[in-house]
Every structure is written in C-alpha cells, then in structure tokens.
Image (cartoon, rainbow, N blue to C red; front, side, top):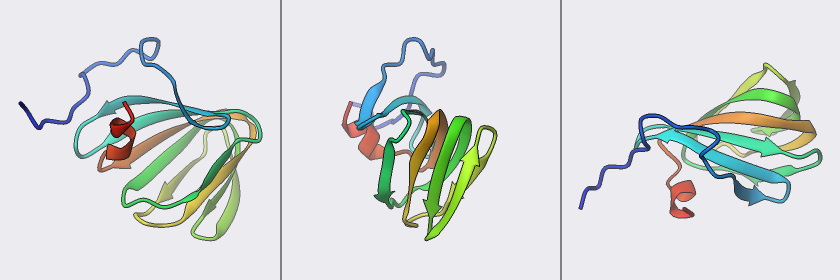
Amino acid sequence: MSNIIQSPVYQSGAAIPWEDAAPGIQRQIFGYDSSVMLVKVKFEKGAVGEMHRHPHTQVSYVESGSFELTIGGEKKVLHTGDGYFVPSNVLHGCVCLEPGVLIDVFTPHREDFLAKK
C-alpha cells in the first residue's frame, strides 16, 4: 500500500462534491499533495468561520462576496478581488457580509479535511 497523498492531476469542479463545513458554509477540495492544498469555500450571508488556528500557512483569495476577516486581532473588510495571508498558528476567522466564495491555499495540506472524506 502506498503512502502517497495526492489528488488526481486534473479536477472538474462539477464532479467534486460540496461538503458541509459549518452552518452556511460548504467546501470543495481541489488539488493537493502532502505539501499544498487548494480549497473552494462557499458562504451564505451571515455565515461565520469561527475563530481558529492551525499549523498550516494559509493564503486566500476572495473570488466573490464580502467578508469581515479577523487575523491576529486585526479586523478588515475584504471584497471580491482581495486576498489575505494567515501565518501558521495565528488566530483567525470571518463573517460573511455578502454571499461569496473564498479560494484557500494551505501548506502543508489539511490532513483534517481529508480525514473526513
């Protein structure tokens, strides 16, 4: 049995199931290997990404919508086309102000996301 952790080389968004992540929040897991992971996260208005921290470094892009982000105690409202960076183990979370989608990249991959599959 192989210990290789890797997604298929190509992913079709229409074929990737949406997973419930939290009330009003769903995610699709796209490409990954042991060092990186891309995740699309869809939010309904008012949905809350609870404050949390993880050992992964995270870079995110606001594909659509508006979000109030809190990263390391600093709050800022981000809109379509904006992005943010979360260093490892920094407390962060968000509130969705307008329905939207975040594109998250994690390094290394989120093993906890795969464990739920």
